[in-house]
Image (cartoon, rainbow, N blue to C red):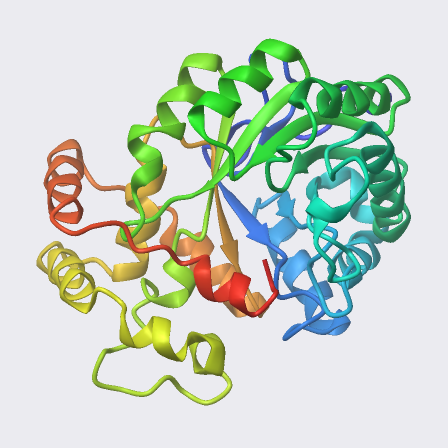
Length: 340
């Protein structure tokens, strides 16, 4: 079977992870691997991967800078998949500096042909695979035309080393420019949650019109929408939001909004977690929602929660509710901590 043949069936109402010609089909829930190699060790990664595959979750989203040291998340994911590699769809990213320097100081930018080819070869080695399903440009590179970046990725497609290309953190205009430059563009990843809904009026419409998959990241706003945190209580020691880098961000969180959303869920006899995932998955343009997990138990909890959907009236009411407050970005503390 060639790398570009359809080897994964559609599961859990998932969709295509690419443009209309792609054979790749993914689960509507994806595992975010940001914690791999940081708070999650190799043994737990294996448990997470096993639980995901056993419950129909086949998409794993990682990046070359995930883990401490950088690269360890890819290594642990590759080790955990092992002989089960063919059951998984691996999406990784490149673009942030691997040496903790600044990517923009590279001679020709992190989107240059030289950098792209080198970065992907390194990811292939760490992931212990001879191909990667989708490789995403982690952040735009103003120093390099996107056509050059996609041309380099197309070379890797022709060599059988990757299947499709993707973008992360790009504007609607940048997405359209990239789509016009290449036929291998498959997906777009952006922050999207009940607290940060900017994608609804920008990126989502672009991806839908272009026939690209949309991958929603940070859907639970780094934990604020899990139901585990209250404004009146200090985060439990050892939990993600107990990290000092989150302290100011946690205090500044839109608690009035979070509590209004929680009340909305309570009145419908559902949980904040179910509402947060269900609302995103009810959007026709959303292909998959990426959830970060630190245990197999969290995988199961998210799989169960993702099965719930609001009806069309609840979607409209909830959309009106969340737009009463401005966007609240969950990525800021991650960047301050150098965890991307």
